[in-house]
Length: 291
Length: 188
Image (cartoon, rainbow over all chains, first blue to last red):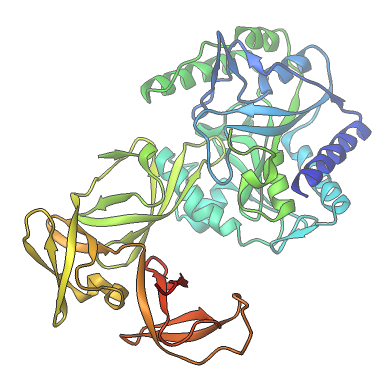
C-alpha cells in the first residue's frame, strides 16, 4: 500500500510540473565535486562522489538557458540515519527563472494540495495541508519560542538545539503548513541575502506537522560572492575536522558567465509520503530501508 | 567517554555523577544545520527522566558500572541478600532496587546485579521464572482459546493474566522483563 501510494504521488508530481511547463531533467548521480555545505557530508564513489543534492548541476542548466526544470531523484548523505533520515533518499527539486523564493510558496502549496487531494488525504494528524500557511520569520519564531534573536547575534550550537527543541516543537502544534523565512546569514547556504536587510537570507523552509519538508531560496547569482562562501565553508569544515572538497569550478564558471535571476526549492519526497501515510518512520515509505 | 556515534537506545551513560539509560533515541538534523542526537534518559537509581540533546562534537560520560553474577539467598526485612558467585561475598540489595522482581525471586536463583561505583543499583533475573498458580477461577468448559484471559495469583499474591485453560495448581512460566504470563509448563 505504501509503495502504490509512492508510485502514485510520483506520477501526480510529474504531471503537476509538466502541466506547468517544467522540463523534467536528470543530472549526474556521481559527481566530481560535491556541493560545499557546512554540515552535509558526501559518500565517496571511486574517484567521484555521490551527489548530496542536484543543485549545482541544475543551476548550470539554468545558466545554459533552461527556464523551468524539475528533477526527482536519489541523493546521498553520509551518516544520516534516523526516523526522518536515510543515507539515500529521494529529492524533488525545481527551479524557475525570473522568480523569487516567495513566488514558490503558492506553487509549493498547490503541489501539496494536488497530491493530497488526488490521494484523498488533505488532513493528516490534524494538519490540514490545504489551509493557508502561517508565515513567520526565523527572528519572530526565536523571539517568541526561544527567547533570543539569532539575527542580532548568531550562536550556531544554540541555534540548532533551540530550533529542534523549542521552535520545531511549537511549529508541530500548528494545524496548517508553516513557513519559516529569512534565515540568519550564517545559514544562508546558497541563497541570496535580502537586499533590504543583508543580515538575513532570502530562504524559507516549509513545515508540515513540525516536520521540515522543503527548503527554498532566491538563488545567489553573484559568482564572486559564491566563491567567497565556498571558501568560508571549506574553512569551517576544515576547522571542524570534516572532509574538504575542492571548489566546483565548472559551476563557478557557469555562474560567472551569467546566471539568470531565479528561485529554487528542494522537497523531500519521502517526508511527504510519511505525512500522507501517517507514519513517523521513513523506512515505511521505501521498499528497502536497510541501505 | 562515549561519542555521539555510540549513542543508542539502551546505552548507559553518566551525567553529573548519576547513571542514566537511554530510553528513546532520535537522530535529527535541522535544515542546513548540524546533526543532533536527542535522547530521553532514565536515571537508573531514581527512575526520574531527563531530555538531553547532544551535538556530534560532544563527549558523553561513561559510568563506572559493573555487572556481577550473583545468587539470591534470602530476604532480610526491607533488603534482599545475594551472594557473589566468585567471591562468595554477601551483598544486601534494597527493596527499591529490587522492585517487582521481589515477587519472582526464589532461593538459589542465578541473577545479575548491577553496581554503580560499587553500589548495587539494578538487578536482572532469568528471563523466565516458573511459578505455581494458587488461585484462579475455573475456565469455561471446553474453551481452549488462548486469546481470552482471566486473573490468577501466584503464591506471594502477585496477580497475572492467564489463558482460560490454566487451573489452580498449574505451573506457569512468567516473563520477568514484562511481568506477564508466558506459557504453561507441562507436568512432568
